[in-house]
Image (cartoon, rainbow, N blue to C red; front, top):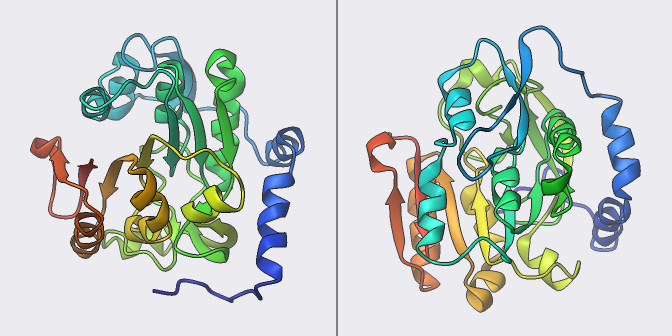
Length: 282
């Protein structure tokens, strides 16, 4: 499936990707910080009191919604960490957080001793994620942020995005993805062109160490991410934690991963819905 909006020439693609990778963290932070809103009305800083991100400070909306209470209490998505623990330790692992949002799991993985690469193309989310990393220097020293979309092709893709960082999920997604049917919500989103890269390119051309664990939460683009990493999945067999957002995506994902020798398990079944569930692939 081709998901390019405007397909760049082969000669142009590496230079575009190189520009993203060669941008220093300091200059990228400076560029994004210009768009960053400081803590304002309706937000406050909270320290996580328990769980994988214990001690981490995050900016959360006020009044605190249920998911924010869960983050503070350390119970938010705890099933992910329980599933990982059945297969390997986070300490010393290399984790890719694809669709990092504002960084709860990025900080959880890093606090548990993993080296984390966080992928997030939404500029507002990246700004808040970097703000959180500044507040948590111990975790931040094990985190690198890549402001790119991970997809099934290298180049530039159309991205549908929200600047709302106060929600559990911004709902931002690739225009070619199959997100849950919320047309009224997405109609208010903005569209932008973002750099995109495949997982195989990250390994084979950019020299990224193969990840041991990959968490994917990309609002309906899950199959696109995995299609772009077939060689990585075949050779290195990383543990996958995938939030699936559409039944058609589940079918594509199942065909792809079982064909590569993965076994799939639905996590947190009591909270799964017809349009959303979390899958462990090992």
